[in-house]
Length: 222
Image (cartoon, rainbow, N blue to C red):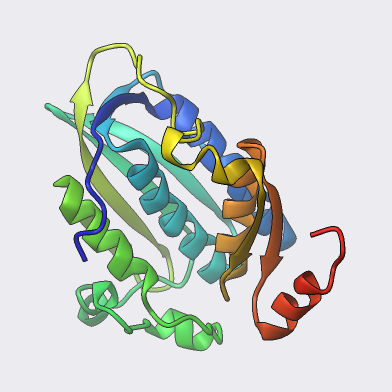
């Protein structure tokens, strides 16, 4: 809705990848999935927090809809750009669904089969963030074999001197010194946000529904 104004910086993909994989590993391990990334020394120009959120969503989806095999996060140079890729060995996405799944309130057949309870907003948010950043987003997929989502980001040969994607923005530093309640019906998203905010020093509690909220509210330590 235009609420996000990109703050473009030079950032290290290697450091970003390391943090992203650490956040998604617990969910992947519970499903018996192998999740890994290809180390890289490349730097790109993007908004650290927005790019991180895009990749968090793509990785969370990959874990959610993959029941065997694994997930790979990597990047490859394409001229003046870098394609950041999220590969999975999930059920794949039929050609007829590939545009529709980026629309609001749309969930693909894989989500229906998995009994997903989300509202179908994850990929639409990813799409809007990528458009705000002018980072093209696309996918390739083979039904029964898996999918690859990739976002194309400007390459920067410069050393990353700005704050890393893991650092807390100054605008939220006062909030993160307090207690934080995260409410979301998507467990991988909750776990990823808990990992990030805890590293920033927040006392984080999680809730998926009204019962969870009531339980946290009744806790005298919160």
